[in-house]
Amino acid sequence: MANPSRFLRTSGVHATVEPDPWHPDAFVLSIDGAEQSHVNLAKPQEVFYEYLRRIANAIDLLKPPGEPVTALHLGAGALTLARYIQATRPGSVQHAVELERELLDFVLEQLPLPEGSELTSHVGDAREELAGLPAELKFDVVILDIFSGPEAPAHLACADFYREAAAVLAPGGLLAVNVGDEPGFTLVRSQTAAMQEAMGSVAAYGTSMLFSRRYPGNIILLGTDGAWPAGWAQALVAAGPHPATVLTGVELDDLTG
Image: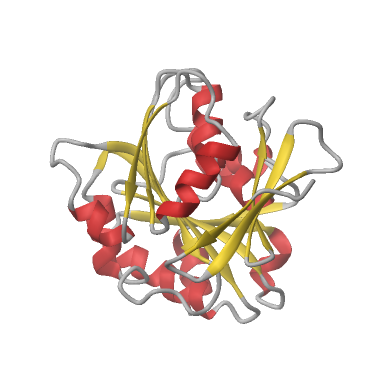
């Protein structure tokens, strides 16, 4: 039987959902033939992709284990992290913004959310939808997972947008940005600098070898309004996947050049 497929009108490509042959109850969302997300319906607390696991590790530090959080996902994908938050922090209130209505509908049809999930979906541009949220909504974590390479949308890849995202954070909240980049890390460097303009503290978290800038890969940028929390860097490194590096302060300034 053919794998489910859906045409995405905004981007003009197809999305497919295929079973993961190595993991029962797990599925892979691909867009235009490129793997985009991995979901384990039976064990949503198990996050397979390395960069998403690192964001999950940061979410784990926000509050004591099991305590609900409020989360905003800019770029929904297969809602892997929304599923993770619901599985590990039942009762969490979540919002997700996705540019492609067909993708959001397709994902929810093929890969239903865990029972009890409280997720409000929004269709549209991430910056416009962010501006349109009710003023009283504040989030413990805002996750931006839109940048897939050096050609990032200019209206999102800038300090002004990060200021707007920071403005919807609750006290002690976290902005987590996935930056996929090519060797040289032009986008990682520019986005680190932009986040440093917008936020009190910024850290870069990823596989240690990526910081040589000789390989393509994903770096997670983490921003907070106040000082970088004591012990977080060590906790993130310990959580893996290994080997991991977290850069803050002067070491992060060296990254941006």
